[in-house]
Image 1 (cartoon, rainbow, N blue to C red):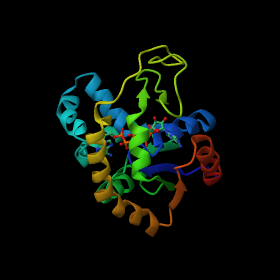
Image 2: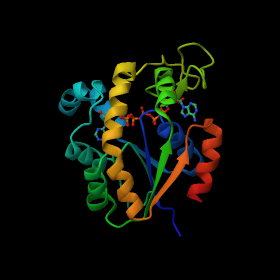
Image 3: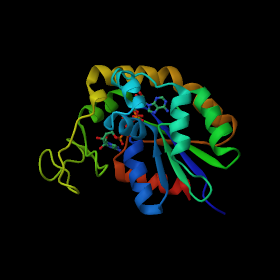
Image 4: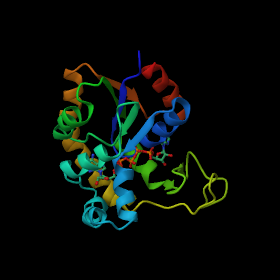
Length: 212
Ligand code: AP5
């Protein structure tokens, strides 16, 4: 039987993007990160990008319908198994994902649990390579050359919303919105929890068992 679609749930910095990248390279899943899609709109200065930049820089959520449309325009569920990363983020988005995207296609939601102080340390030390998509950390995954991506050689960036005060707001938003999402998948018996506070390699081994 084919694998279910995967929905990665978890606070900012819990490691969803890091693990999604590994799953993609090992299993060939498609990867839909609504954060990446929104940042791509900002980078090309589209009308949508201009509208959402200040919302994202403040660590607030973008309008549900806007994100749903962007997600729908970028995935084709006919022949692909996807990792949904960063969607859904509230109860309304969970229902929208089911009604307008999955429409009965089986899915499994994996909740990455990490405590907030550990997250702040992770995010403030995160550095990203926008072109290659590599995710670094000054404490746990340093680039070989300071400030440069090991894969592409491009300059690494610190995301605008990774400043500590914005991260704290993102975590508050997460705390206020995640419960209905967890309840939604619990009620469908599609939810599994993962201790994502451990080193990335250990988390990945568990993740592979969960999706087998
Ligand atoms: P988005 O881009 O989705 O960000 P996020 O959910 O806040 O998640 P992050 O990308 O910050 O973290 P991550 O869990 O992927 O962690 P990572 O693997 O990088 O959203 C950004 C914004 O877009 C939102 O605030 C909102 O405005 C908007 N948005 C997006 N989706 C939306 C939606 N559906 N609705 C409305 N608005 C939406 O890891 C973090 C760091 O830790 C890295 O440095 C990494 O190297 C390190 N690390 C990872 N795992 C480990 C480990 N196990 N041990 C040690 N270090 C680790």
